[in-house]
Image 1: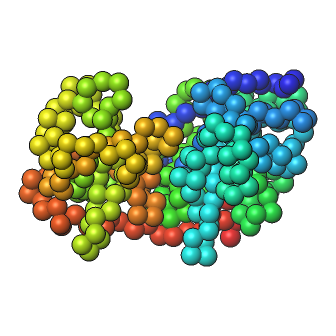
Image 2 (image 1 turned 60 degrees about the horizontal axis):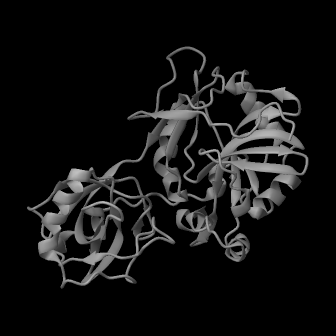
Length: 354
């Protein structure tokens, strides 16, 4: 592979902000805004038939997404380097949105399973920055120029009708439009808004962009815990919500310190349902292929957690423990407390979309 930029290449990163940055009053725009895609970050390197899907860790994701290698060879310039996101779309109620769970399942060790999933849940690539084209390294150009070159290189790709697998994200310089996207595009499975300086260069592994992500809280019932695999204490706390008289597992809360893991197990163990550990019950969506053992608890404790968004009736990502809620009755913890996002179609989030 003989390109101006070679793998592995760490992507440019973003720092968090509480709101979408405004354009300066009365002057030329400074920011370009685009939806924040919630998939696998990937930098595409193509030199003829040689294609690498470089992940943030530097590993090649190509073996897990063989259908994307073929699409890149067919749809992208012969020699290019493109920063973007791998996603898996699915149709729900006549609209197309992202399916994080289906995307996560694509990382599988068995070649036969990879081939099957490539056919059943094919991925797509959303490009949002062009880093090299032909013999030219574009990272030193302003983003506004890289964006124009990206649209030209993709031929205005923006259809989500299945006729193409490589697309360009939509973008705007209107802060009000970006703020609207922050709320409406969540229904298509997106994760917030990214702001990039129009004059900014591409700087690998530096937080030169700004991200505004969704953040919400919910009161949930603690229905179990998963023991930590290698240290004392719990690994994650399993959460549930009531739907009428039925309790539904919605996901887990994790990322505890070593001391806190032990403290939480001491709090939760008196609520154990018997002494057995379940090995084949409801499993956390973040542990596919791992040990599924968990400890069921009587549904007596309520906890407030921070989460970003739901996917169907479950948390899209692991929640973060905030505090105990002894003032809440478990039966009062229902789906009705959750904010339901507007359901936009994936095609609305692509350049040249509806």
